[in-house]
Image 1 (cartoon, rainbow, N blue to C red):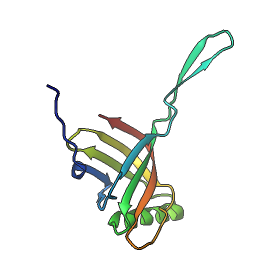
Image 2 (cartoon, one colour):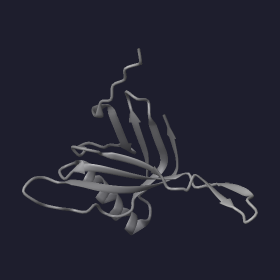
Image 3 (cartoon, helix red, strand yellow):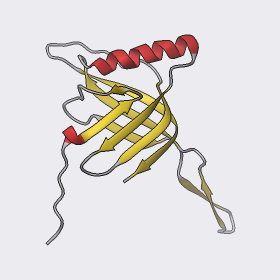
Length: 138
């Protein structure tokens, strides 16, 4: 019989420095993508192949939160500070307490304010953050 595992979104935590992210969106709420190309290849006219390993170990993180989340204010303030002083980077830590996935980077920053939409019901806001060198483990 196979192993049974459980995923619980309440067990996924995310911290931006001392700010604990809260008010996650009601669907997909965190996406972590490598920014680099990983391993690429070129094939010469004679069929010789060369592989290149990208030195880019940065990441792009997207986090979706409810429009009422305190995280919107935190990220908006950091963005405004970064535009003004260039000194608003913060460490990021994402951990799935049940699954063991961990992502960390010493420096992250929002690249622009989240889009704002208003309607009959509350909407989600998606923030895109870029990081310096990051580590992702499973």
